[in-house]
Structures are given as C-alpha cells and as structure tokens.
Length: 159
Image 1: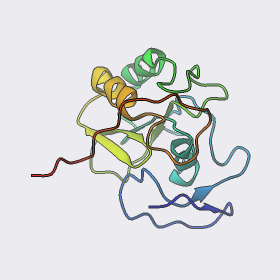
Image 2 (image 1 turned 120 degrees about the horizontal axis):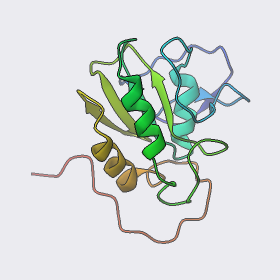
Image 3 (image 1 turned 180 degrees about the vertical axis):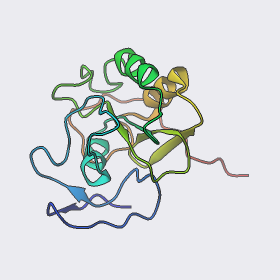
Image 4 (image 1 turned 90 degrees about the vertical axis):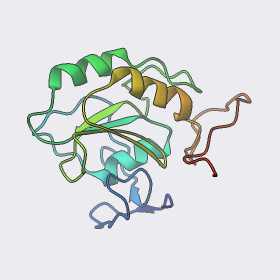
C-alpha cells in the first residue's frame, strides 16, 4: 500500500485492516512510535506504528480492553534481537510495539511490513517464527546493511 510520509493530522484511509503498510506519519513521537507495550487506554494509531513497520519493526495488536495483558507482556519480554540488524527490543529499535486496535476482525494480530498473522489468542511461538522469517526482510526502509539471506516465501503459493 506504499510508504508515503504524510503530515501529522492527515487522515489516512487504509485498504486493509489492520494495515501493514501505507501512508503514515514521520514526526518525533508520532511515527515511528517508541517500541514498547501500550496499555488498553493508551492512544496508539496506525499512522504511527505503520512507520515502525516501514523500518522493519514487529507490531502486535490486540482487540479490546479484555486482552490478556500478562501474556502480551511475557511475549514482549520473549522477543529476541531483530532477525537481520540484531537490534535489542525496545529503546531506539523499531519494535516490538504492542498496542490496542479494536477495528480488526481478530482478537490478536502480528504484523511486519506488508504481512499480517491473524490469531485467536497470543501464540508466542507463532509470532516469534513469523518475525524470524519476515522481520526486517520485507520493509522498504532499511536501518542496517543486511548480509545475503535466503529468499522470503511468498504470501501464497501458486497452484
């Protein structure tokens, strides 16, 4: 869906929900947003975290205030260094971001640039495998020089 930076305050209509690419903010504190777990009452919007995805970050979304915050925190603590650049999670790294997003069809979803893993529950093993496979490999804005790696599988295999 592209990766155009737009002015903060611009209303962006995304084609897919949750969005894993598209127009987004590029301003300090607005996008990319700090990588950390966000609580159910924190205001986090796609225009911010889509920029984290553009940099290769992992975003985990949950729907509703009743989401399992204990499992989400344990997942955050389990995320290893990023698969290509070796960034430590949080701090100045683009991910992981864990945030509430009520507009999606699933209770949980893991995202990297242009890819979404929908889930009915927090599946740490599936999320970490998804991140190891696609994290920092599909995003357009690279934060490090990657060494050659195996090619990434397409989203769907031809029949």
